Image 1 (cartoon, rainbow, N blue to C red):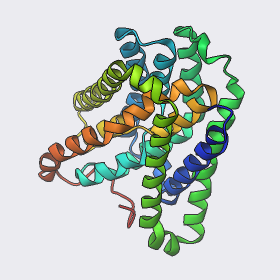
Image 2: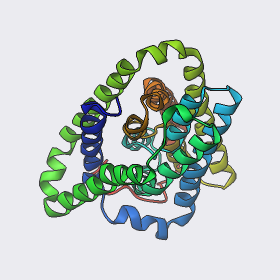
Image 3: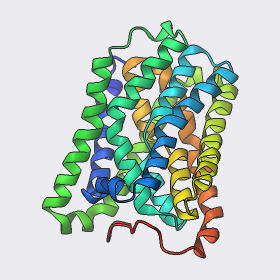
Length: 297
């Protein structure tokens, strides 16, 4: 798969389109909030950039995953938050702007964090089966499918704001369709591995999902963040950009795509369930500390 048109063209192109659509929802204010409201953003990003990949390491060790699947789980854990986390946070009456800020910053930071944890995991689990990883190529690929299209989307929004606002809902639907097609394609491409390791992959992915959401919520409350902020951070940890993990994994070895593809099959179920539980709890809370950008949510 790594030498196929799916891995070299279709996956990166689909991800670039989705990240450009994310860029259409962003302004420079989404990045400045880390300076204006550093506490919530910092706690959320530490959970996302440090806690999540370390949990993936621990779960892979605990469940004794085969090396390729273990590296794939860490790759998933190191991936940034996904745009659907923003929508679920909004529906749960959470701090939507905090969610958007975390997604934006973690997506840009992925240029460094994803290659770092991918290399660390490949070395730790001695995953010789995936071959040598050309780290410069991974860095370049992540840049081309995240930072560049996000920047392009932001530029389009700045230049044509009314058109962007009018068309954004259609673009969001396109992003969801592309996401579903890529996940299905990844599962089909590696169906033999999925079926052979279904129980352990499913257990590892579900454990990572629930542990990341639960621990990040507890950390947020211990840090005295309000329920809206804790909701945003938990959903950001639960709804990863699995498509980035699939695209990067496919460029190295197809086995790396499996944890992300399986995770995608149920992360929306747990995310929607959590959002429903928090909806009523957040209903009685005050206004969020960070006001959502106008007309975006």
